[in-house]
Length: 157
Length: 157
DNA sequence: CCTTGACCTAAAGTTAGGTTTAGCAATTAC
DNA sequence: GTAATTGCTAAACCTAACTTTAGGTCAAGG
Image (cartoon, rainbow over all chains, first blue to last red; front, side):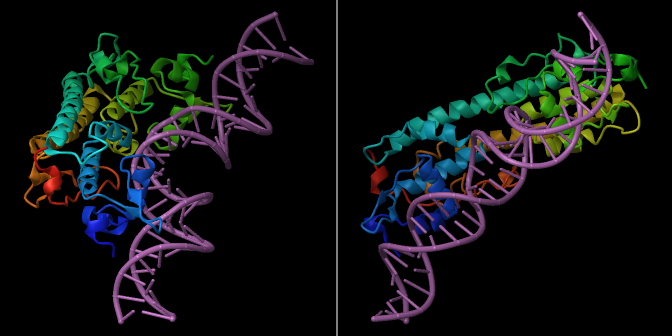
């Protein structure tokens, strides 16, 4: 097995991060890591890539897409091994985005109160009607329009 | 165009919710709504389905999968049009799940502090190392193992 | 009558984030 | 030196949540 001095093999990286070999190759294809190749054409990784992949895993847990993670990782220097300062600078950006995400959820949750069961669910003045701050969420998500006046069917049982 | 008295057509529902017709059919296939058919075989929806679809859209914004949403909607009565009480009961369950989600994110965020740049990122005692409470998150997500001692490359620049 | 527009079904395509498979090359272990 | 690992690529497959396409039907207007 390729030992550390000339870089880590993909198998070692896999064993030490818990990621599948196929996942690591997939991440390379998406430019999250940039291994070099040895004389035989096999991938060789820096020890710093362990940390990089750890970060990928954490950020995914937080619900970030690989695209966003790539953006964040782009904050790390390319030419040299990232220092502690490099990592904390990047983490600051990460935390900001994370806080923003949590804030959106909380704001929506607060708007939710009383809005589901009551008539306002359907009226233009319902606080859930026009959740501007979610518009930036990921994916081609739903368009979020509320309609239908409650009518008699929702009158007190 | 089919008017309200004998139910709403899929086109009307689409226009009033903002959902694509194809999406509504897709939701029917996944049992989120159960329209009946008119004599010509066309779908006809209850006015209450507008509310149902609104809920689907909201819950998706909160990051719930259609499967979870189906579960939640199952809390509404099948035989009759849901009353306000039915909706609020369901919303209570929804809020609980939502609060749980937010709590997980917050807990992780708090653990994150200081963990990215420092050496602890790699040590077994790092608080991010074993985030038990995220294990239940959706999908076959990452396995979340941290490795690599920082070593000299992370020493002060 | 005949055209137009809304609707129908079934199946294939799409994106994200991977995994699996097939067939072959490089390394490592004995 | 040879067998067993491990790695390589390319392409197919997988789930979620839809959209698109293809080919056909239904209902209303002129």
